Image 1 (tube, rainbow, N blue to C red):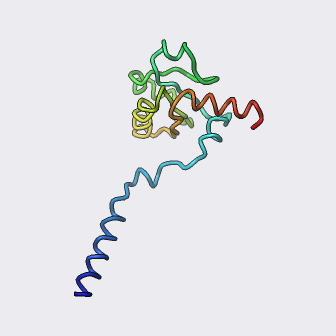
Image 2 (cartoon, one colour; image 1 turned 90 degrees about the vertical axis):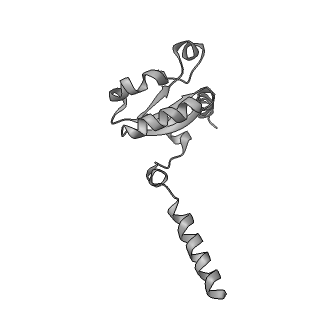
Length: 124
């Protein structure tokens, strides 16, 4: 009985560790605050132009999600922080960018990215 339990535990442990995806292992780990405030990072707002014009983060480019694949060459070789309203489109943009070999970071929402910028400019 003890042997069966031992092998069950071993099999379970191997199964659980085998579930890790390679994407998680290769994802860049960085503090989003550092990335947003880095001079060599391109900020990309993936919302539609009307939303972008109503408010966005400082120095952000507007490349709507629907046009991202067609503009991928503009971003290749750059570090990119993507964001939108609530993070849903940013997640989709992250998938597109990663599949195309772009070093991308998820800024979630434009308000989050703007708050990080404001935090730095206020000296916090």
